[in-house]
Length: 402
Image (tube, rainbow, N blue to C red; front, side, top):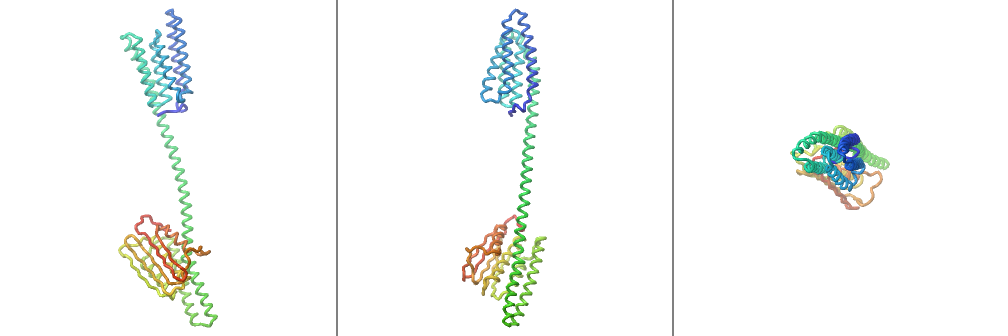
C-alpha cells in the first residue's frame, strides 16, 4: 500500500539519519586525513553532501512520476563510488539502509519499496564483497544486518499500523455515508408513507361517504319531484329507500373506519353478496350474478379490501349515471387470479373525455391497480353501456394495505 507524504511523518527520521551519516562521515574523513590523503577526504565529503542533499530533496519530489527514475540510480552511483574510498565499508551499509528505510516510509509496504530494498541491499553486498577481503566480509555484513534489521522492521510495522489506521478511517467514512443514506431513505419512506396514507383516506372517503351521500341526494331529489306531483305512495317508497341508503352509508363508513384501524378481513363471499344485495334493494335494474370463489384458497386480506372497493365503485357508478336496465356481475377466482367483471346496458360514456371535476372514481381504480399490481380495462361508448374488467394477482408476496 502506497502512503502519501502527508501520512509518512518522516522529518524526525530524516534528521536522525542525517546526524548518523554526518557522524560516521566525520570518522571516515578523519581517518583519510590521518592517512595523508586529503584529496580523498574532500571527495568523500563532497559525495556525502550530495547524497544528503538528494535525500532531503526527495521529500518534496518523490511523488513526481519521473523523479524516482532519476533519484534511485543517482543514489546507487553515489553509494557505489563512496564504497570505493578507503575506510568507507561501515558507512555504505548505513547509506543503503537509510535509502531502504526512506522507501518504506514514503511508499509503504509496497512492491516499489520491496524493489528498492532488494536493489540497495544487493548493491551494499556487492560493494562489501568488492571492497573487503574475504575474512572481513562476514563480520561487517553481520553488524550491518543487525542494525539495519531493527530500522527496517520498525518502519515495516509502522507502515502496517498506518495502513490499518487508513483502512479504519475509510470504513468509518463509509459507515458515515451509509448512515446518511439511511437517514435520507428513512425521511423519504416517511414522506411516501404519509402521501400514501393521504391517498388512502381520499379513496375511503370517496368509496363510502361521497358515494353514499351522492346516492342520498339522488333519492331525495326524486322524493321532492314525486311530492310536487302528489304521488304520495311513491314518495313513501322512496323515503324507505333513502332511509336504507342512509343506514347502509353509515354502516359502510363505520366498516371503513374499522378497516383503517385494524385491517382485519371479513369472509370474502359475504362481502360480495352483501354489496350485491345492497345494489338490488336500491336499484330497479335486473341484476345477473355469477360468483365462483375457491373456498379452499382464501383471498388475501389486502386483495379483499381492494376488490370490495372496485365492485362498490362499479355498482355505484351504475346507480348514479348509467340508467341501466340490465347489469351483470361476475367474480371468478383461480389459483393465481381474482377477476371481477361488471357490465351494464346503460347510456355509457366517452372513456377518452377528460375526468369531470370532483369525480375521482377512475382515478381510484388507477391507484388500486398500481397498489395491487393488477390489470383493469374499461370499455364504453355513449348509448352502448359499459364493461369493466379488473384482474387481481393472488401470487404476489408483497401485501399493500393501502
